[in-house]
Amino acid sequence: MEILKLENDQLEKTRIFLNTLLKKHQDTLSRPGFTQVVEFGYSFNHEGRMLGAILCKQTDEVIHIELLGVDERDRGKHIGSRLMESVVSYAKTHGCTRITLTTQDYQAKGFYESCGFEVFGFLEDTPIQGTTKYYMTKKCDL
Picture (cartoon, rainbow, N blue to C red):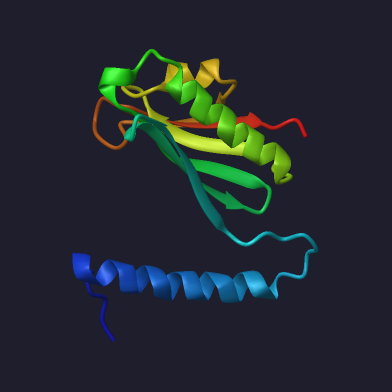
């Protein structure tokens, strides 16, 4: 037996393998109402051009925002806020109680705070020396 570093062309096959294991584990849970992992997202478009987008993953009653971005030319137009509102609306209609995300000190921490997110943890010098990674959450009122 040996441990091998995966090459880029092996990552998708490995992701499928791990997701199969996860599904088997999820199928053994007997708690009523357990939700399979659902990936979803929204884009904000104007005249055929994508100006911003958000990608999320719902697991049970929690949504994790994986990526949110707005084209630099279109920042300040409340596109990020509208994308966040779409996720909050999704959360409410799908019975989710919490939204989580991570951000860096040089990214959009202030923006997320203005959307109602609170820091519940942080790691200094992560992912590189001199930066801080923040773990944030927002409760959803159903």
